[in-house]
Amino acid sequence: MQPIPIRAGRPRPIERPDRGPAGIALRVLRDLILLFFLVVNLFPLVWVMLSSFKTNREVLDFALSLPQSFSFRNYARVFEEPYMLQSFLNSALATAGSVLINASACYLAAYAISRYRFRFLKVLLALLSFGLLIPINSALLPIKLIMDRLHMSNAVWGLAVLYAAFQVPISVMVLNGHISGIPRSIDEAAAIDGASPLRTALAIIAPIAKPGLVTVIILQAVASWNEFLFAMTLISDQSKKTVQVITRNFLGLFQTNYGALFAAVMLAIIPMVVVFMVFQNKVIEAFTSGSVKQ
Image (cartoon, rainbow, N blue to C red; front, top):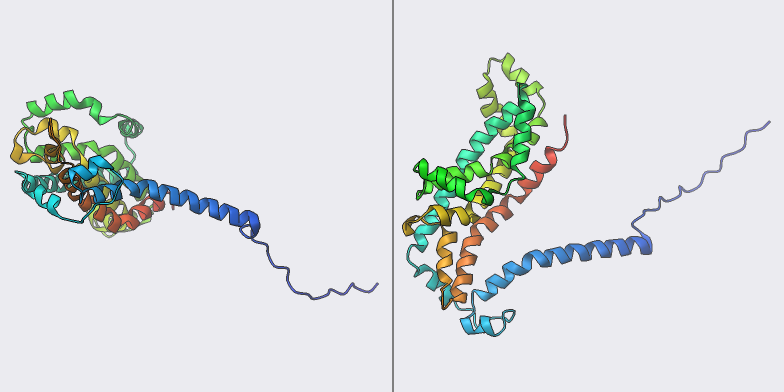
């Protein structure tokens, strides 16, 4: 019985599912959805920017119209407001202080949670998870009473401590997920070389966990810079108010300078927008790297 000869022919091309009418339609639909969300997210920012160049009459006549002239008189009016420059400094100090406290404390806590097994560990993780579900604004009154009792009200450093405490659950969760993806063999090798647990955490694991730390820093900075309710409630001295609270001064009881108000809003949001745009790749890297265990 003779073997059946095998005819050599061209390999059949693999059909890609994204080709053809159905694939093109799906790609178009995907692009339209992405474009829709892009417009939804960018429209408020663009609208505020354009409105910051308008006069009150232009804003009230038709809010969606383009400004007749791009004049910076509204931005000049912003810096004529008393304590405006001081409010930027206050916000920067409160934000920097909260970032330093939150990042350092939450990193050590996350390292201990991911590397050690101790009693009530599950209870601690449950409390941290529960802390993500509580709207912090609902605790305004008890927090105000506690801050008054501790003499931390009407102080920028008090806001820094408070802001750092607000973000503890999310910061620990982010860092815990990231550190858990780092092999334990690195800690074991450091221990064999004589490194203490603290030195291992700060000198060896911290550089590897840099994307997670950058994420926590950005989230903490954005939350602290944009916070309004507690800054308005706890700070009574005008010279200690943050930029978000001073911006409210452009809202008058009988008259509002809308052009200056929009200009102040633009100046208030630009720093955090720039920070997030510069470090957004680090944020994405941190959230994706913590999802794979090694």
